Each structure stands twice: as structure tokens, then as C-alpha cells.
Length: 232
Length: 310
Ligand SMILES: Nc1ncnc2c1ncn2[C@@H]1O[C@H](COP(=O)(O)OP(=O)(O)OP(=O)(O)O)[C@@H](O)[C@H]1O
Ligand SMILES: [Mg+2]
Image (cartoon, rainbow over the protein chains, first blue to last red):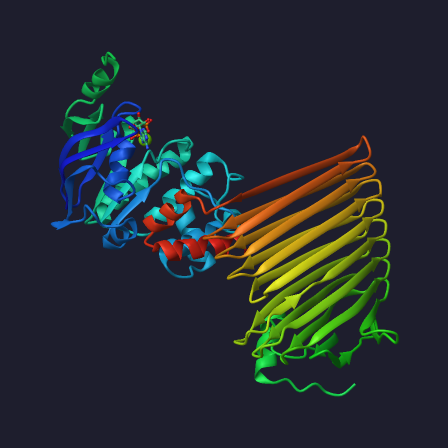
């Protein structure tokens, strides 16, 4: 469903993504992991169209989307949950969900979406999506805004960051049910073993390159070794 | 007074400024093309035409609760220049909503002016929510000009909430607001302005926090697009133990220009005054986020501005 061919990306004199080649099949749950600063978020942004690669080709369901705008990619079927949720002035949680749904959601519908990510909904609907919300709250609203789009390809950038244990368990459930229901694919960038352990495939990125692809079932300590043995 | 007949255009203007299609029950004063055309009073709210100059005196009895006053102004003839003096006397512990607003339709080539000079006198414990919308439309070259003046005198424990909105179609506006606050009184001002083309909007606030425990919160959100210009001046004088907070937030687009001049003056050691001002274009990350939800860049900008002025 998604093919990355020889993707290179540089910013500010730094060669961040180095010749990335990867094919993602549909219906798969993929985890991307790797050290801080290795280029995971950058890769996700390249897929979403937020960053344009210097060279390489991106195919989505066989179609070249390398030069497609962000919104066209969104409409073609790609969704992205930001590592750092964006805040707004005046846009409420309900507004944001409406914008994502492209229709006026009833309070009940909006509440259900928030309940999915463990937010006690009514108290949040009319709050502004600004920094008066806690980091974990913003993160969960971000996830809700992405989940509701039910895209063929959904990318989450560290969805678990800042989220408490209870909601984390919830999130795992959400991902599990997504993979059962969806014929599409989910890509989750994560450092969490529990998320890695439910993935069909783990892509290990280091220093802007795909260092390894580990299939489900292979022992996890391989990855931890790779992390801890790294000499810089 | 005679029954007011409203044309389709006038109803549309009323809708734009007060969310009502026509005359509603309750205290009401409608001014049309520079003349008073309809007045209704209630046992608690009296409206009396001024003898010496255009305008009305509005008397709200002490302890009046759950009542609304509508005082809309509509102008559909080109070239009208109208200055009105409206005084509001709000009795002790009354709690009311006042809906004002001015809608101008100018298809002609001469300018239309409306200046509403409003004075508010709130007795002890009185509470008023004042909502005002300014709106202009029309195809002529004649300008639509609104220069409102507001003077506020708040008695002990009184509260005035002022919500003013000007989103569309006013070519030039200079708004002057002055307020004097007695002990434990509260003034809350929320202003929303959006300008287009070569429009100009100017707002001047001068608030004297005279009373002990008085407080004032001024929030201004504005959007200056195309080649429009805006000026925001606020002066808050803390003359006693008091709290004052001014927040001025502006989004600029294209060649829009905004000048924000804050002044907070502490004349008392126990005055606590804060000013926050921010001017800038729409944050790129906000547009990007909404585009990832499938909105076009234009749709994203509109959603951000709508939210900002909501
Ligand atoms: N616009 C930019 N200009 C310069 N350097 C950049 C830019 N964007 C990213 N980088 C750098 O590229 C590297 C990869 O960043 P990226 O955010 O993709 O890392 P990451 O793998 O997501 O890390 P983390 O696990 O901390 O989220 C970092 O060193 C970062 O500082
Ligand atoms: Mg990252």
C-alpha cells in the first residue's frame, strides 16, 4: 500500500533521512522505533507530505504521491497524529473533532470519540485546544482527531508519550481493535515495548537509515541490545 | 409610538446585528435612518426620548431580573449622519442584558455615519451584560463609518460585561471607551474585530480602577487582512488595591497592519496590572495540522480565524 523508494531528506546541513527503502503492506500494524533524533518523526512527516524529500519516490496504492500536497494526501487516505499536538486559540475540542469529521458531530458522538481515548468527555468538549490542557490531555485529543478519520493508512508519532497507564492500556486496546476491524494499515512510532510487541513488524531506524526490520515473534531484546550497545 | 414596518433588508440587518428577525417582546427601541421609529417599555424598564438631543434615557428599576433590552440601529439610506446619545441608568442589584448594535446598508456614493454615545451608570450590585455588533454592507462607494463612545461608571460591587463585535463591512471605526470603577466592581470587555480591504479600526480604552478590590479584564482579538489597518490603545490606571488584565491578540494577513499600544499605570502599591500583547500571522503548524485532517489551506485558515474570533 505504501512504498518508499530511495528517500533522502536534508535540513540545515544535516542529512536526516538516508536512502530509505521500505514497503508497507495493507492490513499491517507496523512499529517504528529507534534512538532519539534518528529521523522517525521526519520520516512520518515525509509520508504525510509535511516535509518534501530531496530525492526518492513515494507510492501510495501504486500512485506516485511524492509531490502531492498534505491535504490531498489526507483525502487520499493518509492520517497523521503529531508527536507534539498543535494548539489553537479559540478552536474547541468539539470544533476540532468536527473539522476532522467534516460534519457537525452531536455532543454524544463527540463524547464517544473522546471516551475511546479515555477522556471523560463532557468536561472537555467546550474547552479550547490550547495549552491550558495538560500534555496528556492534548495528546489524547490529538489521537481522537486522527482515529475518527478511519484512514486506510494512519501514522501515530509516539501516541503513548505523556499518557497515563490506564489510558495507555486503553490505547493498546484501541490499536488492537483497529487492526482487527481495519483492512488498512497502522504505523506507530514508539519506544514502548508493549506497543512493539503487538506490531506485525518493527522497523528499527538509526541515524536516518533503516537498520533492521524485525518480524513479529523475533525476540525483543535484540532491539534493546541494539539501542544500548550503540557507541556514538 | 407607531408600529415599525421592517423591509426585508432591514430584517436582514437586524439578524446580522442582534440575531433577531424583527421586533421582539420586551423593552425595545428601534432607530431607523436617523429617527426613532419604535419604542416599547416594560414595568421595570422605562425608555424616555431625550428632549435636548437625539437619543434615549433607559431606566432599569432596582432588582430587575431576567429582562433584556434591545436598542438596535439600522441605516439603509445613503448619506445619513447620525449621532445618538443613549444613557443607561441601572438600579441597585438589577441583572439585565442589553443588546445594542448598528447595521448599515449603503448602496449610495455618500458616506453613512453613525456615532452611538453610550453612558452607563450602574448602581451598587447591578449586573449588566452588554452585547453590541457592528455590521456593514452595500455596493456603493459611500463609506460606512461607526465611531462609538462608551462611558462607564460602576458603583460598588457592580459588574459590566461588554461584548463588542465588528466582523464585516465597516470602513472606518474609532471606538473610545472610558470607565471608572468603584469598590469591588468588575469590568469585563471582550472585543472582536476583523478588517478587510482598506478598512481602518481603532480602539481606545481608558479604565480607572479607583475602588478597592475593583478589577478589569480587557480581551481584544482582531484579524487585519488585505491592506486594512488597526490600532489598539489601552490605558489601565490602578489607583487602589485592584486587578487589571489586558490581553491583545492580533492575526495579520497579507498587508494587514496592527499597532498595539499598552499602558498600565500603577498609582498604588497594591495595584496588580498585567498586559499581554501578541501580533503575528497564523502559525504554520496550525495550518499544517488542519491540512492533515483534509482541509485545504484556505479552509484551514478560515477555520483558524473563525475559531479565533468565536
Ligand atoms: N527542520 C530541521 N532542521 C534541522 N534539523 C532538523 C530539522 N528537523 C529535524 N532535524 C533533526 O533531524 C534529526 C531527526 O529528527 P526527528 O524529529 O525525525 O527525530 P526522531 O527520531 O523523531 O526523535 P525522537 O525520538 O526524539 O522523537 C534530529 O537530529 C533533529 O534535530
Ligand atoms: Mg520524533
